[in-house]
Amino acid sequence: MTLLSLHGITKRFGGLVAVDAVDLEVAKGGVTAVIGPNGAGKTTLFNIISGFQTPNAGHIVLDGTDITGRPPEAIAAAGLVRTFQLVQLFQNLTVLENVKVGSHLHMTGGLWSALLRMPRTREAERAVETRARDLLAFVGLEALADEAANALAYGQQRLLEIARALAAGPRLLLLDEPAAGLSIEETRRLAGAILAIAERGTTVLLIEHDMKLVMNTADTIAVLDFGRKIAEGSPDAVRRDSAVIAAYLGATHA
Image 1: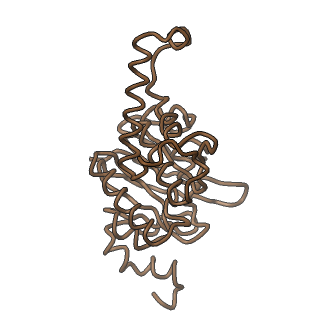
Image 2 (image 1 turned 180 degrees about the vertical axis):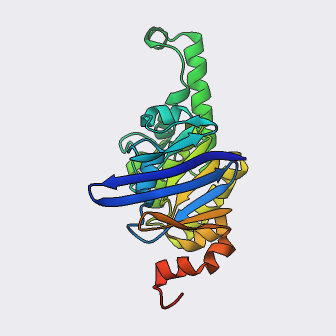
Image 3 (image 1 turned 120 degrees about the horizontal axis):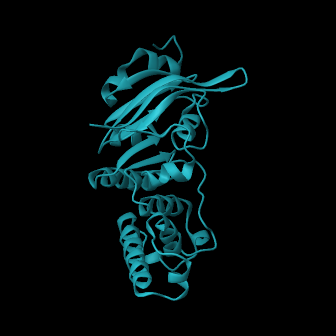
């Protein structure tokens, strides 16, 4: 079953076509990867899907609802949450507080309820903290809950950002180059986390340059080159595709 569908997505910046009539379907419950050389249009495509940029043409459907052109907060509320190439944490908050911030989409009650500390507000706050601690345990950071986010190693900050995104309860999680800057061991742990996220029922769509991570986690891979989709299929099929080999290594190798 398809969770996300892209139909003819196109984005131009002046005379440059960054994304050129891209079609893509993301299956519910699996891991889909978008790969391609630098400048292929991958991050622009993610920005369009998550509402940070508007396409010049085409439309995006999330679980049967057209979300094209909606603002990022509306798309997040619809269940599509993303991370970024550069870690974007609240550096002066604790690790636990960062994850709790991710739960704001599910908080109920108004200003007076919060000020008066109504029972339902206290109950909601306890539920948020329990959920946040569970997510920290899920990514292996539970022992660091009270540390400042800026005290974490870079790989730990990556995992914290994923935990915060999961706190929003997404149906679809977009990961933008999550392995960038990670060590081999950190990347191995990240791969395990991505597979576990999918096993828990959250669909994952990721951009990544680490081919070992992609091949070990993705069910389906789409390949972009100069803004166009040149291949799509299983990891084995994409690995053997002559157009993909040419895009990465040059036509003579294909």
